[in-house]
Amino acid sequence: MAKKAFFMKRLNDHIQYLKKMDVALKGEEDFSGSTHKNCKLGQWLYDEGLTEVGAMENSKAKEVFESLLGPHEQFHILGNEALDKKLAGDEAGAQAIFTQLHVLSNTLTNKLLDLDGMN
Image 1 (cartoon, rainbow, N blue to C red):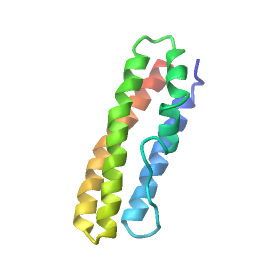
Image 2: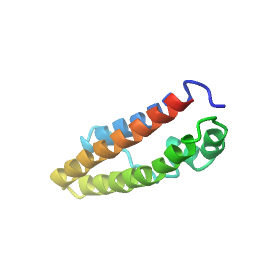
Image 3: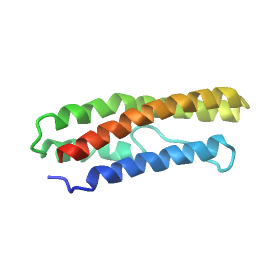
Image 4: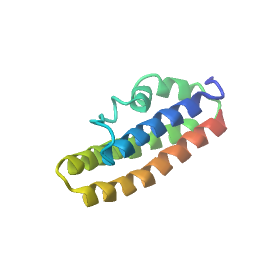
């Protein structure tokens, strides 16, 4: 069974990635983004995550876990589009996508919090 703070660590990984995106889109730092399988959350999702969630006693945990995959992948697709727009000089386009990233981020956050509550 996962440790109580385990999903909070995954949530923190995601939030740190979002912060890096924000700083990059403001032009304050270079950040090239990553694929949905290469970030810290993605590495967990596509490696030990399913096993760890499968070991949980709550039968809905696997369903919530699997519902993370699509929004997480979309988050990275859009994030990379935002970075591309920033590099191309399309500030407004980059910020519009960043707004969409926040919506996806809220979805991911809520699902990770749900998993934490099931633990």
